Length: 350
Image (cartoon, rainbow, N blue to C red; front, top):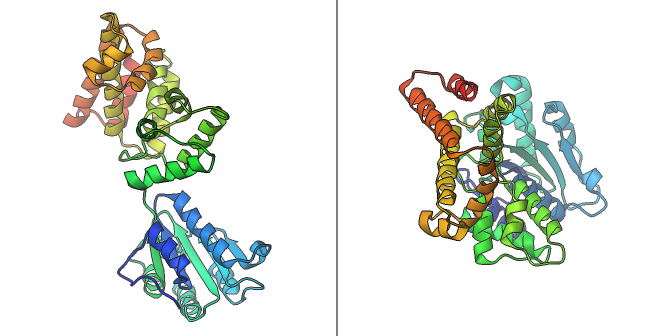
């Protein structure tokens, strides 16, 4: 067994990469965290390192999330056919999240098997979940015997490096200004954002397709990046200001289902409405985009993105909607209305 971490240590994608390169990978691994892209990267990197080309379907085994313990035990009793190691990957298993999913007899059998595997050098078992319960005896057991790696969202440097690398793969590059614009528009670094590296990779591929044989422009970025912070809010405002209340309710409920917090949704709506009002008043004064940017410090590209929405309503309509949004925010904070009910009322009265 070659172990790169102590039980008290939890690695990340950088330490995993180092351990793979130096061949310090034990037989038992836990991958967890919110960045599924990095979890998949870790699994694929291990495959490339240890699985012989052409034997992926034989020496690399993927078990379903609802696979029984007996299936896992059977797979651990066979060795690699031609590869350096056999890899068994179990994704989204409830074994590491719920103690009610396995009886004590099966659990003890699994622990014994995992302990014996840990003494071998030709099998790797990977448990990968978005979250794990470190209090469970099985989780503790695996963490003690093997290595655990957490794949959270990247920091700003790591995120920019990821973007730059994916662009280089397509013989493309950003200026510093364009990099900052992409980062801002994607919303990846925002708290509670659902925008992940997989979304980023897809947006870069769209951008590359859009700019096949030409230089990337700022407008290309604005057209290509879906972004997390705007994707629902702009749809909601568009429907709200077009008086499409059914669509508004659908969008709001979709955000609720994805776990977005009501007060954060409302704060985003108010922020966008305030920005729209500022831009609207500036246009009424005859200012152009560049002048508005200088006066308000709002990014020119965000101003341009706001412009189509100004066609749906006038200043009076904006003020009315914004006042109601303030009232809903106040009522929720005072406890006058339950959050979800308050949002539905907000849509109904406009």
